[in-house]
Image (cartoon, rainbow, N blue to C red):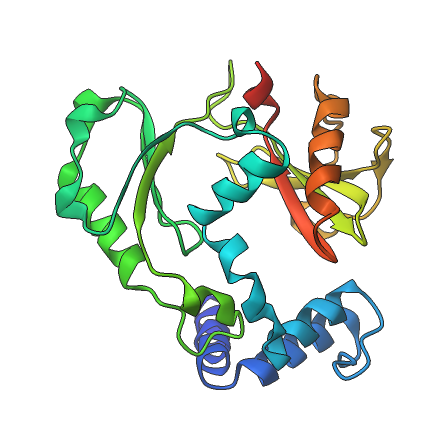
Length: 253
């Protein structure tokens, strides 16, 4: 079984790097049972894929840049909703770790994951941090259909570590918005032990959208500041045809 999975992963990586358009068409067919209508998209998945394939997605690069995006969020909803920023650098060697608080998150502005999270500076592993961040800096997403990443100048930044009382990682609330309206809220729970997914409407009624082993069968407590989160997501959503707005309720505590 492991050999079969390894072969599938190798083939998947090959098609993703050499023929991304074919890769996404095959993945779409596998999940939906038909090939996507990219010339005349019929749903939000096809709209996003169409923008990826025709290059229109490049215009979003300034919003994808995690450092530049802070400026827009501060303007649209207020700087108080952003994690504290401790610094921005082009090289790892320029970072002064002595200026950081005891807990912090070290990231790059152009990628996904590959963060170095420190929850106790007395246990800071500089070598591991350097390896993690420099590897992230070197990833330029060449040949990726998400061409907006190639237009971002890679940088390092350090921001506030977001905590949640009694939990290692807080719930992640993802507001799925289309045509300026919030359509549903995806909640990511149990993120430190495999992550499960649940969907809710704006009145916090659970929606039966999740599928497969990642589906969360329990109930997620209604976030304390749901109404304020909806207002924030709605303001940001009004600027875009489609956007996912990610929020933590801990930001309001």
